[in-house]
Length: 283
Image (cartoon, rainbow, N blue to C red; front, side, top):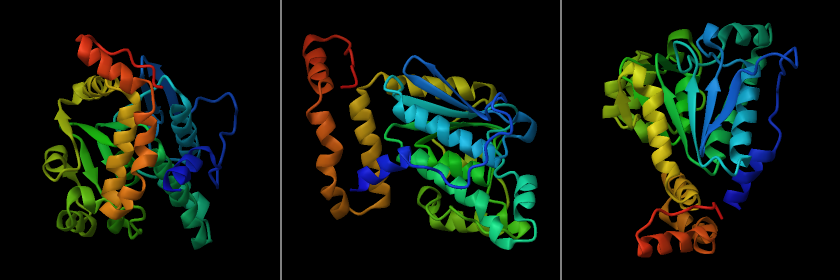
């Protein structure tokens, strides 16, 4: 049931969408594929990739496209321009809120749905972050499975500095540690890539001009392994972070059966026996 719910999230509607005014306008999140690696690019460099409603709509479309692409076995999520993502577009948020405080929830709700969609995708995603990874941008990066950061990237949870609620951060403490997370929330002070790596938030820190290359190298390394096994292990690790052992044991067969009864396991064993590189079919 749990994994079926995740699959439904990949095909179900996302509420509160606002489409671009012109169907011919450039998408705010683009999709491309290099071999078996999908590349999703946030494309609002003039706004430092602040998340508009239209951008969140395009993000869900791109993530669903990745999930449905049988030839895409791992994805890299990046930002065009000087920043990965600086969070929600506050100018648009103010327009949406107007004189109705309840409207504050429109953009965060859509953002949380988009981040949940990233987590529900049964294949790994790598965030390649640079410049600034703040607020909702940090949530989006954390929704991915791995994070590669530029050495000068700034992270932050700034909501208390502007009197806003920190919606969606409730599981971030599992990656940063509860006391570090508490300090960052209460002080709203930005922190650097070295500290982000030290507390377990980031996997790798590289020179700023090597972020994309490092993320692609990591993605290609993952794509060289059995896609079915990679997808199953991705889901298993995600569930282990969220649930206890008893719950996980209920879903073991649901996770591992596609691997055990697939063709790739036979190819993997044969290639090992024959001392050759496996030819994965994702079957």
